[in-house]
View (cartoon, rainbow, N blue to C red):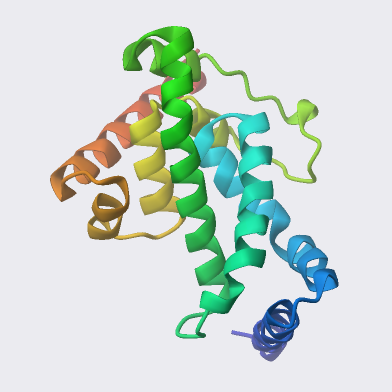
Length: 196
């Protein structure tokens, strides 16, 4: 790693430490700094987990509210960014669980819910965020909910299947099979796009 790259990481960690200290003192300006640093990445995670832009925006706002309320729980055992993304993942998953009842009231079943989610059109031009989404992200958004969440947590966020199983309250084997299912569906979608 080049010295300037290492220096950038050190400065970011020091910057995080300063922001955390300011948040713990109740300085609201630190929350804005935190949002400026991590807002797009948190939004991207929420979008990948939810598959819906409006829901992702709502979840992103809730994440920063939770960070403000729970910053005193951050002990520094890990990098702040790791803790922040863990909070973001937990808030998104919790939000999705609550929303499932609402989706069922409109669509009736998990199968219809998955069909509705798979029909989402994701279009870069509609984004209000400075976030370019790759073709893979578009395909991830179309995955069935459980497969999408497991795929994002495992492949994108680096969670272990044991952690996913605990968070989602599913068996480790179910996490692995959902990940395998997501990979297969993504491969089919990409092959179809390339050959279509």
